[in-house]
Amino acid sequence: MAARFLNTDVNLKARFDLKPLCNELEKLGFHSTGDPIRRGSEWTAVLEHDYSCKQGEPAKLTEHILRSVESLEGEFREIWNRCLSRSFDMGFDFDGETFSSTFVVKPEHLERISAAGMSLMVTMYRNSEEDRQNAIHTEDEVTV
Image 1 (spheres, one colour):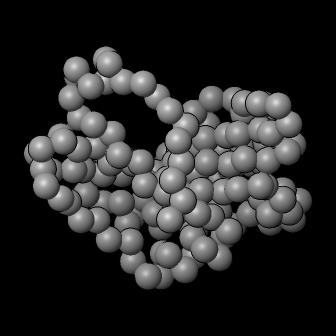
Image 2 (tube, rainbow, N blue to C red):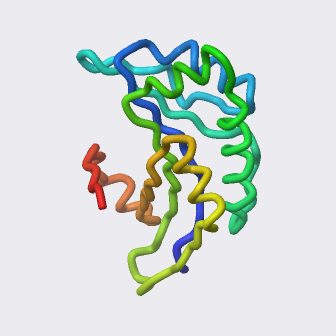
């Protein structure tokens, strides 16, 4: 089995409580994967868009996410802009046996992701029950 697209998360990090921004994003079609978490002086939040993306249609989900983020106005646009980081995190699972799989992000989507001040991240999940049971979750992030 080749790699397959799972979902896209929007990850936020700030030095203030992200709950008001999360509440506004929920009105725009997102749902939080949990309440914002505070670690020291930083808050983090992870949101997913409610648009149900069929496998193989990440471009449609990307469009829904970007349209929602771009519609933020007033104080919520200011809060968005004050975040320390905003990332567009595309998740894929793979079997570990396939040599390669290719997914393309259209140039116009890359431009809009960048214009929204978001980093593009890719998270790969191994698709085996044994791997999931023995997995050690890390928060390692490699910047390229």
